[in-house]
Image (cartoon, rainbow, N blue to C red; front, side, top):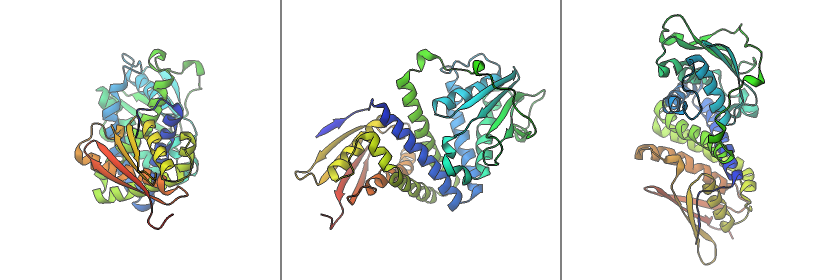
Length: 353
């Protein structure tokens, strides 16, 4: 039996980040094509409003934003937080009451041809769920977000500014559009940076992974609040299995895994779980034809209720079943859930030699 604890290999952190990024992209496309653009809009609003409540103000201190004017702090937050998650955002400060952001391509959540398939309603949902709520969270009813360009419209990418208006805004005024406006010139010397002492290479690598993992975790749960639970699990599981199948070769390279039988598949999963910061123990039968893995300390379910865990794991485990199904050798990956652990059994399919 061998044990693997939380990984320190940055390549595995990066592999997990890429996997979960692709899963979130795939889930958006799955929902858009199977459930429709209106569901995407409502889902994005639910997802981003929840993430806003959890992350926005709680991150101010560690990003060095306390004490700044609200419009400036809002814009700098989006530059810094997105930078940690691998999204390039540029900052242009026009005044203490008006500060711009421009998201630059490539955007991972719209990666490659996905930008052509994710509907415009996704943009409205996440701007209303996040950007338009900054004033509410900061206790400033005059602060709103003005969008001047979007991604799916073929303009020049998502761009806009936070402005402190001269009166309190109604709820439907917190997000506005001014497509004729353009941001000030970009100044590389004016870009905010996170406190260097707190953001070393290891922390940045883990933060990039966690950023993508949280999008998946919160995205699946948000979907279950917008469509019936069984439908959400169906959509999220189908997307997970497809992404696992598709991404296995890239993950195998990162883990140094072989496309072989049960032993190689079991070691692959253990390495990938280490890249999540989880712990895993693996045991083989005498012939190394069956692998039993005890998967503990699941990062992705930390802090969730038992019901939320059930919904999330019903989808997320299909990601790993997809990677096993992608192997040249036909194998099954059965799962048993016990409290805070997953028990995996990998074996050749019946009739396979």
